[in-house]
Structures are given as structure tokens and as C-alpha cells.
Amino acid sequence: MRLFSRQPATIDAENSLVPVVRPLSPKGKQALYAAANSGALKRRTWDGCAFNQAGNLLGESVQSRRRAAQVFDTTPAVVSHFISVWDQLPGSNEACTQLLRDAIEEVGLFTEPEATRTRTLAGSVWSLF
Image 1 (cartoon, rainbow, N blue to C red):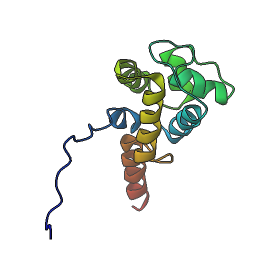
Image 2 (image 1 turned 45 degrees about the vertical axis):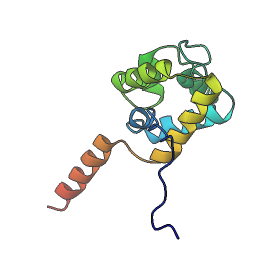
Image 3 (image 1 turned 60 degrees about the vertical axis):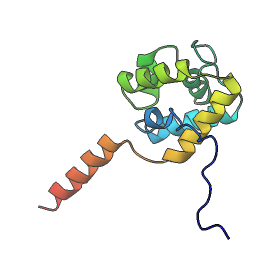
């Protein structure tokens, strides 16, 4: 009888999209998730990229970081950080699209970014006084 399970020979690397998906708004995560479920997303181009395709699903044209931030209720810095990680992912577009779906499922489709939750909680506490 074995008391401890054996460690796998290879350990799955942590999904590098998780930390860049987490600060996105629920609207952004939901739109990116829908885009990822509609087909493989491209990297290193605006045409067919994650934000472009997600915008198309919302009836919005997204061709810049600033526009992506406006459409998805976030900041250009959050968009830029996502893009820098997204564009450097190794593997096929299909594999990277699956990583994006997995990352969004891990952080949750409806979760608010940490800074928003902190501001909301702080505002709620102050409203008690």
C-alpha cells in the first residue's frame, strides 16, 4: 500500500495568463471568454487578436490599447500588460486560446479586479459611519 502519491515526472507550468487576466473587469473577462470560445485567437496582430475579437462580439471596433481599455472598463496599462504576455506565449494560437479560457475560468468570469473590490469595501465601511 502506498501512503504518498508519487509526484508526476513533469509538473505543469503555471498559466502565465492568470495574473494578467485577474485585473480585467467582468465585462472584459466575459467578452474575452466568448471570443476564445468562438475560435482560435491570434497573437502579435490586432486583426483577430483577443481584444479585437472580443470587441467584435460586443459590436465595438478595437484597434488600440486605449480603445480596448475604454470598451472593457479597464486601463491602458492593464491592456498593455495582457498584450505583452499574450504576444509572447509559446505554442499555437489554438493552444494559447485554450490557455486564455483556462485562465479566465480560474479567476472567474464575474470577479472584480482587486483594486475595485478594495474601493467598494472601503466605501461600504465609510457609509456605515
